[in-house]
Length: 237
Length: 115
Image (tube, rainbow over all chains, first blue to last red; front, top):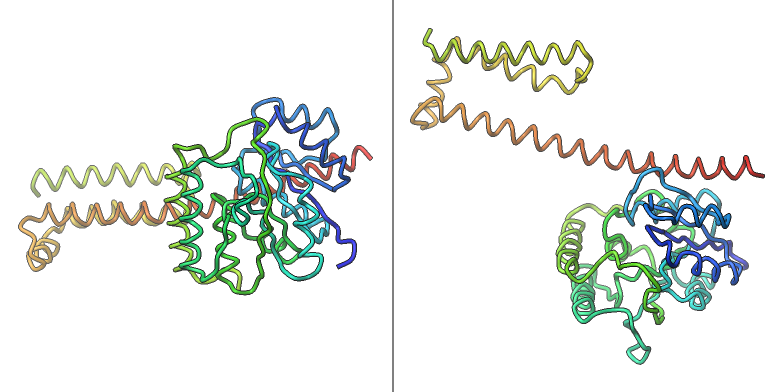
């Protein structure tokens, strides 16, 4: 694929403290982007409008899954070849995007996940002990039910090719979207997924949508979802 | 007729009238009202002719008719609840789609009017 049309999807919910900095770096690197303002109640909307950032304001709050899916719909309708999910809070490093889209450009894989758990030597400031344990457990669980290993199934730093964009535009999990959609793709055996090592920054501002107390609850939820999906007929066939 | 039969008939009639009123005011769609219309009608039939149901309850091993009626009523409520959950889930995904498409449309229109 030569010169693929690439877009960065940035979901934002109450990110007034970090959104401007994040978007400035995206603009600096000259990427197309679209921000999905998921009904923020702070001044996010004013910041986006004032700076003329390309943004879609959801008329009602949908949650992370619905917001990101809006981005995929936008990417699909505007004929983008590659879409990258990118956090508004400064967790993800824009420098890795080139690496992230390389395997798709070379037509090797359909989805690339930026993972902090492949390369142990990379400094990883992102997660607490309980979170790391949860992610390892989830990784094992996904391996058990799909036969394939993803080291960082919850990573929100992903790049998708046109085929996956279309798929996600039509069908995207509304809760805990990353691990669940990764699992569905693995299970369908039709798509190739690759993980590349990245480092993630401490979030510049804002709170994680999954805090320590919610981690266990989220874990149980994801595992239940995966169990249910295992029973369901394959939606991507 | 025993007092209980009369009470039950009146209660079912009140429910029936209420449902019909809702239908007339268009606050319930006809499609969704079918289950609710059947309920009071069955109640009335059972209240006036309890013998067949009593025989059935005895045959199934229930000690009293009331236990049998309770069981059927609870089962019916669970069923209605279950179908309501299905319809809520469906509506949720329809609403999500609406919000997404409308928001994208508004964004595109904004862009067009600016350029």
